[in-house]
Length: 405
Image (cartoon, rainbow, N blue to C red; front, side, top):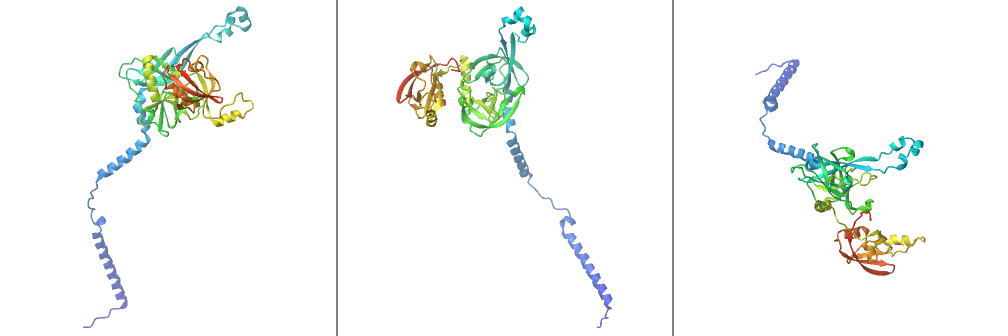
């Protein structure tokens, strides 16, 4: 059979048509195969419970890391109070101001410039430690106050009665009569506090009620001598949480909202440094103040200085030094209080205390703590070096009557 030979142009046209037809056919097949284009995708089952749990866990972690302060403050905040005090100072009237001859030259207004009495107002903080209405605060907040007013966070005010003051530890207990259903601040333990722990100060600084500041515990057992208040017997918690006048007596909290200290604004020149009385010390003092109204502190009656060999060498190298000091570790007696236990026992200025009851004493703070922990009337065996000689003396402690001596 013989086929007709098509012209070349016709053959090219037929090839193009065939190519187009094949392209259309392939396109249609592809559209039928692709599920995204040909038909709805089959439903995919997803376990959303896992996704929900993960979201909640993430959110909870974020909240917990940023608002533990809120939880801590909410736990104790209603138990923190504001304490307002009033004190009237009466001045002696100068007899010259009432003399007609005197007033003739200086005028009648001179005597009116100095009123015979003046009312001083104070502000501090405190916190409720018992449902019956016991409030803990600083002694310097309520000392010598004629009137004490305690204001709760909910706005209620009550007249406060000072049950006891201890100037040596700067602690006081105030009682209010507000029923037996008051909020109570949870007390923690200062013995568990470590440097670097969170520290939250709550109070009324500068009259700004219900103020919270946050920091960390900077150091522990900062002695009152190091702080610059030699008339106190305390080892403070030091913090960088802001503590200002008005914070005094308020609580210092840990991250769990437990009271670990009592804020004490005692250094007006302190910038970014605050101090708090450890709560373990405050608990013991509060119990005695509630029971007896005061705290008896034993004392020896010496003004002392921590002595080191380097300090002694520096003193001995000075040609104008009035005394040569043994180049040893101990406590140097700078002054003996007249009629004190130390004076009665024969302690002299210039003595170096080496031991008490057989225990080596190397710092003034250590000796002070040793005496504070002793009993009233307890006889202490004190070993001292006097010049080149060693003396063994017996000192019977007595009750401290004035914190400054």
